[in-house]
Length: 213
Length: 213
DNA sequence: TGATTTTTATACCGTAGTGTATGAAAATCC
DNA sequence: GGATTTTCATACACTACGGTATAAAAATCA
View (cartoon, rainbow over the protein chains, first blue to last red):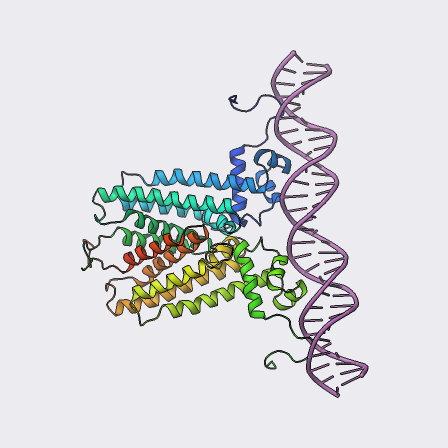
């Protein structure tokens, strides 16, 4: 395999940047969903004409898959950064939720929620690949939370009898409800309040050994 | 307005039952989502030909709106029944979650989650009416949980400093995560475990007056 | 400067999908 | 039983969409 340093030398130079083009295509899918997004809309959004789109990304479904992958990769990075081990768990989780809300409310046509949940969820029943990507992304986010909770438990921020795997899924559940409610048109302030009460529930100390034998 | 008792008398009798036809149309939307569902698929699913569909339900979007309304109405009924005030809160919530899981895993082509979240969420950005219906449905479910939690708090099942409105939204959040994860292909046993740990978190007694001034 | 390579630009093809027109079928009313 | 009413069944019109063929444009190499 020959390493292609930078752009290829010969031929007419590309008039677009693949990274920004993919981001623009993703924005189109994000608003309308996969099925309702036309290639004309993507063409307009990216400024690329149809043949260039095909040359760069393949057909519509392949392009959508690349958008899903990119979103997941971005989310992974942002999550790892927000879950900084230097902060208390509560602050780290708050950062995650705040970052998510900023993303979910960043649409030009109003709040659009999470790209994965907002678009891949619909496809998931009939499109096996989309379903698998969605499921794996959700699992990976669960795992990131779980690792962070495990660390917090070891540090004594949470009770020793905490089940990190179970609690992580509930931390994710809060993220899911934010994704849904933002796209459903709920006010951001309402979601901020949900974040605070969720943090209360997740991080508030509980009675240990409460199990009455 | 003349009262039409039963079916109209004159003319060729209808070959379909409107209620079951709507349920079958809903099933088609449920799997593929609004945009990807063709009228041919609905025609096949219901056994009605295209003109009969239009005569009965109007155009595609109107039919979809009726499916959304019907699902919401069914959910309202089921929720009210499951939230029986005779049971302890924990058992009532468990019934709600179990009923939801039965519905979410009832698809012929695999788990399909919640019809509202699985299909209307995608449309919500560009379709104002769908967004409003979704938002209002979510709010109504929040309110049902809130009323039930208020009752449980009055009975002493939960601490007196419980915030019913906030806790209700987290109870809903668990429902949302079940809706997402089931459609994303997660195993039912995994979701059953989430239900149990969520009930633990929601219903486990907390330290009162834990706020350190 | 001319040949070669790569991308852009326009136009087109085939298909699929929504909504409707038109006439046959099946019931009731007189 | 014939007229009337309502629904069914087939076919069709129109549009929109995904994907591609073809040729011009813009770069490099010799």
